[in-house]
Image (tube, rainbow, N blue to C red; front, side, top):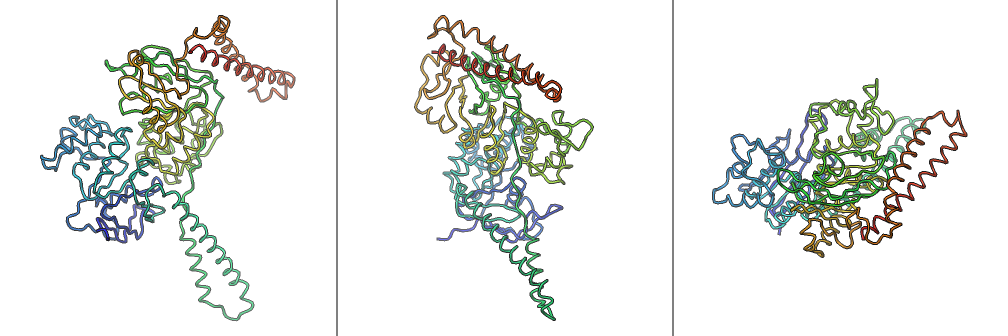
Length: 607
């Protein structure tokens, strides 16, 4: 039985002062459709959704909405003028008898309905718009990044709501797990064209790659045909008194077709480069705790992070993930306990608030005026991992074109702002990456590339994210913060954490002391820093000696590295250079052995 159409776009064309965003675009959304709307950042996904919602009028074409069909759009920046609270906004236009629907949505989305709009965060305002849409229950819901600013619990609640609804919906999201669970068809925007596939997002990448392969084959055949026809046009002149003008015109048409083919955008040329190698111990936390205004963020907590670890911090919004991260990185001090950093740490930080970006600055200035990237005396150059690069050239690595270089940051989409922040982050050499919600707004291709880069990165990664799929792909250890001040260490990513959590129950002693008992399979799960236990007297004495020995070796290595940084040393004093090289290798070997011995004794002391 054919499904009734909910919305139809016919021959839509739209231009914003330059190249067409869409040209002769047509699509239909049917009753019960569950559609993923995907495409590169800046491809026009949000614009298309606004056309579907009737908020943006196309230059030409028609939007057809059958009588009696309601379309609801989750606004990115809702207008709260005239509303005293977020709840007043969310309930506006509803029958008072349906106010319970707003309250139910607010509970699932963790929204404070009594909050004043001018005091609410951007995330709370977006959640109010989402609660309003869910309560209105239109026949077609248009959801633009509904999971942004939602924690994992709220994402799970929204997922269950959308699974149960009878309404049709179109989703824009960067969250693979969310899209895989909910969608049964895919709309793909690519270079102004919209294709539809009757498979959910799980089949998108295979379908996309097949389309691109067929496109490459067609372009190859077209080029061969043009080459053959061009040879005929040139070589056949001497053999014929008259040209076959129809064939000549056909050659011109082939060339015009090739010229009209829009090359697809390449992958961002992002790269990460490790600076000085850090020591094996990156961060050691012993008995750290933190409270704000009488609220316990986390109770006394022990953690050891070693070089190469990928540690994900998960939990509800407001539970304290970013606070714990800032305590571990030394940005804020703990109320109790000690945080010790290893040697040679070079941290690069990705800030989820985008606070590092001035909305009124141009993309050019956002890079060239950054003190960590500025090149003295060259306003058109930036320093990228120790080498100067032209600003525009570096921006192109992150898929920005030359026209955007002088555009203000405020004109960028959320995904483009994330890419600009990644450009600043990746210009620096580092051995510790601190990533606070890096995946928000990024398209699938950029997420895949970032995941691959993190997989190859030799340094240490600390990650806060609500993207379950990304955590599974990246994290080797997950720290779960679930409230009540508890922080528990689990081996693996999100799926591993959920599986282990279902199998383990904290002991009464752990609940009393607030020191969480991690699952048996979790690495380094026992509290660090306790001596005694299974150590002999000699081993205990050695454990006390080792930190001083490690410190001395690190100081000697630093001096030798400084000596050998002189580029003229090898030519000027070859013997001295050779001896310094041998001494450096010897001390690096001793340092590695000392660190291994310290870790072995520390583990043994911990029981």
